[in-house]
Amino acid sequence: TGWQSIYKKLHMLFPNKIWQCILLILIGAAFSFLGIIFCTGLREDVLSLLLFALVVFGIPLIINIRNKLHIQISFTGFVLTFKKTKYIHLVLFIYLLLTAIAKSIFIGNTGGMVTFTFLLSIFAGSVIEEFIFRFTILNGLLERYSVIKANLITSSIFALMHFNVVNGYIVNYFNVINAFVLSYLFGLIFIYNKNIIYLAILHCLVNFLIIELNSHIL
Image (cartoon, rainbow, N blue to C red; front, side, top):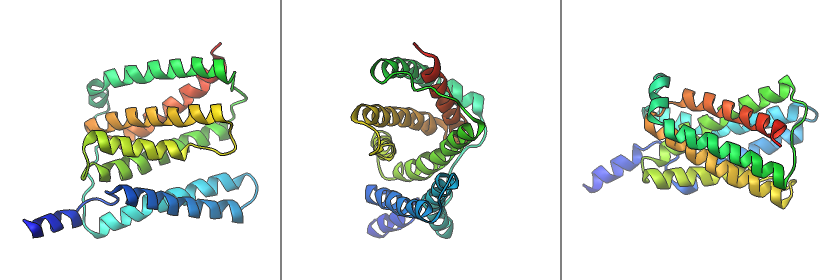
């Protein structure tokens, strides 16, 4: 049984421990920072995001492929995924509405001119975040921890990634709490069917809805 336990640990998806996830994010952040240093202008944000995604998504993918580990992911069954998680979707919509109202009261209207480039960056960021936090991190943690613990760890890391030292206390409070709750709900939907494409599309729609609600409510 001892050898079987070692064999099982060696054949787990990477990352599958908290420290591995944090280290991976830090390495990705370091490469992301290089994009800001070596590129100035409008492209620095894009390059920074791509470098972060390349490291945090690429390293685990290479390690898992090298170890011949199969990642069980569904790319179909959108209707089935929605039916299974329709109540989570309802909670998600109600939460977004309440958050938009609270934000407009405490922070004010944050709406502005929405350009195609801005929307493209929002959607690209959403897809990248899903492949990093659900496809890579949550998937690996589910092999070692319970569903609740794995989702809590993933959501905590996701929330911390949305902390911005430039923002004020109230704005950061909303950003971090909001990111945690949304990530947890996304995680619950993903766990039901592991449909990463569905989650990527949903994440894009949620981000667009957040922009619209913040622009028009109150």
